[in-house]
Image (tube, rainbow, N blue to C red; front, side, top):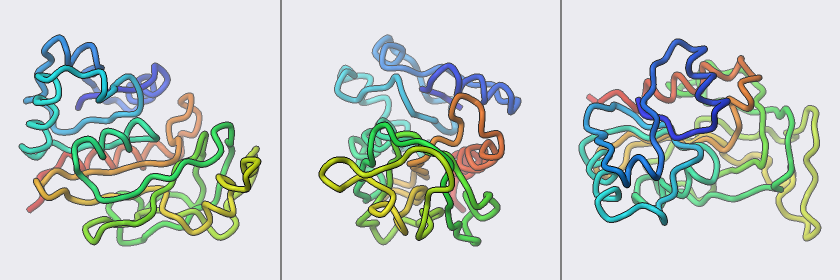
Length: 212
């Protein structure tokens, strides 16, 4: 799989025993070939706006040929939108919010069905206006905050009350056949929340598997 992510997230993948191909804006502009990869994990270091024409063609070809995408945070959501994959609207929470939060998992989800009832957020993101092909794998609970720092912005938006009940993990299959998972949480934050590693691994396994 290919990974465009922070050093801490790459370290977490190594802890999981996964060998990854580093991906970045520069690597794609330099001609990186994605053909041998099953899935991409993207959370930082990859900007659609900074990709040249051929690099954009390479990414479009990757998902058109069934390559999966696991996108985390705003960078992942932006790439999903640029590639026209899942029909969702990302909503940003307060940028300095962080902490442990309660979530409700879809027990039938191959991504979050076995996930724990808590996750970690930093600059939380959630998804609204889900298209018909999009599954809400994990939602913020009615009273999300367990511990940490998460208050609304001065205008009253972006707080836990706004996020309550909203989807924080979504997945689905794009019109072109690519499987996509979007994460609004920080399941690999500084490689600390090891109870969340399995959520990311299941996301990559599902996204990287060709649908029957």
